Length: 306
Image (cartoon, rainbow, N blue to C red; front, side, top):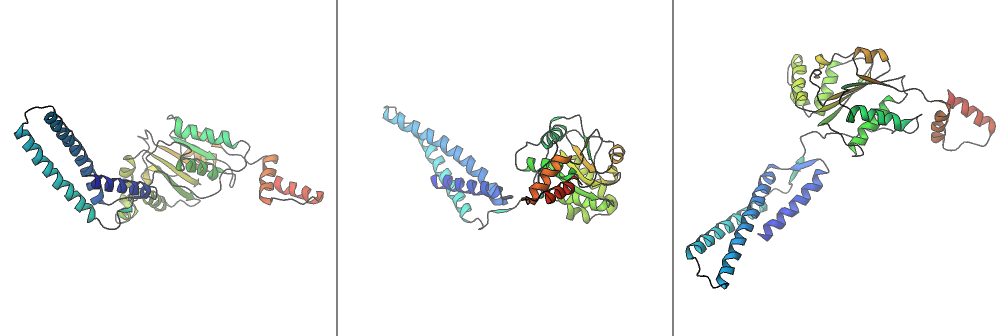
């Protein structure tokens, strides 16, 4: 029994380490572990009965032979089952884990974090409150001119949830890049890919894609991020549930406030261009060292202002 328990402990430690790499136990291991847990419970209960019987013997009590016979028979049966569980463990394949077929709740999105802003902390806090803390807002728009930091803002929120800096209440966070020309099937493919559903979806008639995605998304508490939206997207045609969005949210980034209105967002965040001093900070950070020449510094200030 000690050998079996030690083996179980080693496998559990290995699975915990593999889980951090996005892997899960193979089916035989999944079926074996609960059986070992159950056997450990039975074994401990039997040990207590044996100890009790021994204590009764030393107390001078007349032994109950039938009870001891049953206990001996039970112990031998359990002994055989323990041996079978050890043999099962010996016959496991060399690789005990496989890649997890289920999507991670949040994936890191590569790119720069918020470096310089007029008030980056308060803006990120405001977005966090809208997305995580306040259930009143289901659709959130982030708008502002191109290159101003809209994508960086939501990437920062996403990555803080991915690394555990922020707790997140969603089953899955889905990031979709839309761009200037709306490709409905491209949007659907990105969503399906994130749900580990793409191959299955692409085998179906494209006219059914929206219905199939709708069924998948209704099973989950999701946050959908639509990045770089240039015009209204018909979410119903994509297959994104809107009416029963309890616990689910949608964020969109766009250059146009009109798109936010057309998409009927509940709350909007405007991201402005940087003022002079934050612009200079950002410029200086990337230049790293400026020459002492005043003429060059003056020109650098003009570049940063622009």
